[in-house]
Length: 253
Ligand code: PTJ
Image 1 (cartoon, rainbow, N blue to C red):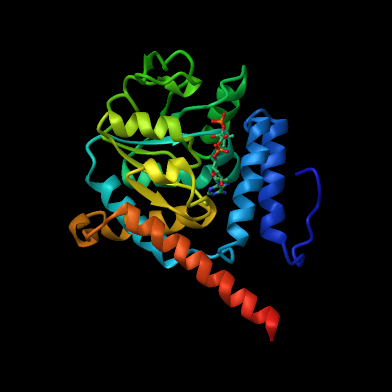
Image 2 (cartoon, rainbow, N blue to C red):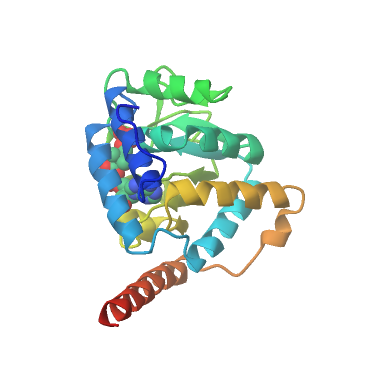
């Protein structure tokens, strides 16, 4: 860590995550654009009071059900998530049986190796999607994200793609896969295209997802519910608006 953040600082956790992203950029884990993406996420997190919304709990439950009932679930790992929560990604893979695949928007030299090292350091055994493995392509996609592992995303029936871009989400849905995303921005194209959109911070959503999976591993049907992603997104926006209305009332008192 390049700076020492005092534990009693009121924004300790937020500053710590920022530092993880900055350090990740120096270590090639995070793309420079990842800093901008993180800042956008922070802004949306403020607008929901930095707390998991009720609608996100419903989406997390649905994501747990989808991962537990999938035949070939895959967790797609990019630079930001590898920098923020590598231990949680490995835990999610171990508990759900999903494979970890590195898949980058900005495939710059050295980044995959840096992310692979981070995941291995946190106990990952098998990592898909490295340069020599990513020999398959997602049809009709021009970004570097089109390059995928033939044993991973290509054959997956359920793909977990946190902090994703809209084009690939769309392409994966077109391929008939269940796509789960985590995105603090409920207005993003990704959130609107995915099958299940968890509008929450990845840092808060992953422990809840892991808990849901661990509790229901042997009885996934207990997670079954009526689910409509459009309604969940509408609820997330409404819940944010309600939070802001309360904040405005506080200012007027
Ligand atoms: O590592 P790479 O090369 O694959 O690149 C990764 C980034 C994130 C740079 C790339 O995918 C990108 O540019 O993403 P976008 O289009 O900026 O989308 C990222 C989304 O994630 C935005 O809508 C942010 O609001 C959201 N976001 C940022 N931080 C978090 C987040 N959502 C949940 N938790 C966060 N901590």
